[in-house]
Length: 403
Image (tube, rainbow, N blue to C red; front, side):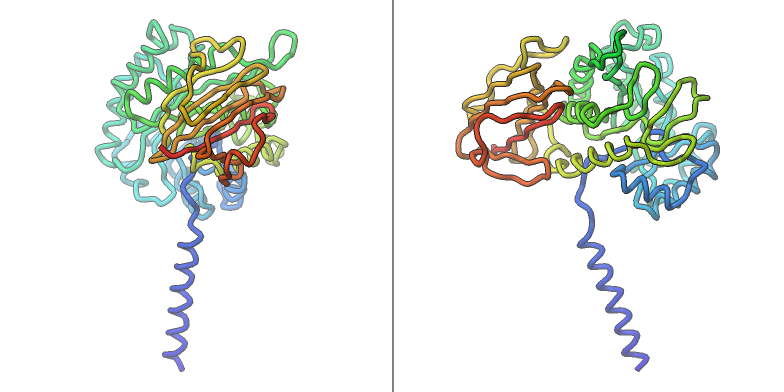
């Protein structure tokens, strides 16, 4: 009887492993929450809540290695990855890396935010010390946007700043921030000039270096940045992905305190009450769309990127000829980003409505091989739809064909 019971227990354990393997989530675009779960709330429940929002990676500033260790243990139970930061990582990098490098929740190591050119030699040496001990997890930091002044960059041009960083700091991936939706002097929401130029430069330089890049969407209001609508979040995320971004980052998840120097408010989690705001639901919806479309964007390479419209953004190119599979293509309204991506034997045409306030009409005709990828990730023949479609504000259309 005891032998039979042991066999049954062993069988149940084996079946549990099989079911767990079957339920393994498909690969998706990483989604990072800056100012993630507050160190004061390093609990499994708060990390599960973050997981529920669709965020996959957590980053925040821990005051010591013990606080980081608590976060890693809680995040592991919730299925969240953590980018490590604590003072010990800089003071004693080898010792600290050896302590955490085998933790299942560890994603990588954070160095410093928005360095200038003068910081590059020190950062390069620091990264090499970490990588000598652990080269299976990435080192990570975030570069300035194009609107940073030359005095902050430490170079004459933004492109030179990015190029010098790539040359001197050997990181496995690149990242930059740029928050494009701002309030103008009359209170109107506008797209900051220079955003698409920033994407152009960063995408090009990352491709030249053969490295993936991550980009941001702003999800906390402060200063001239308004509480983000779902359309404004979509515009940032879909534009980043169309330019080839391999990771999406939210600034922020947890609302920072006012002691940070800004009137931060309405991040996904409120600072004072520690409860969700309406922005939590907006990023949850956005993250669902990212997850559903990861099979298009994850590991895809940009073949070409261009824009339509009477006026195209500074620093970008006007759309010219498309591949022969597309027989007719026109857009109305403010215009669109038109990106062609390749992934294995698949080619994708990604069309993003650049207007986050108004819908856009797109007329597209293709041959019989053209397929349409819907927002839920399913694929249908393009001819199942009429030739003229209306694209919601900041939304996208995706088409697919075999090379």
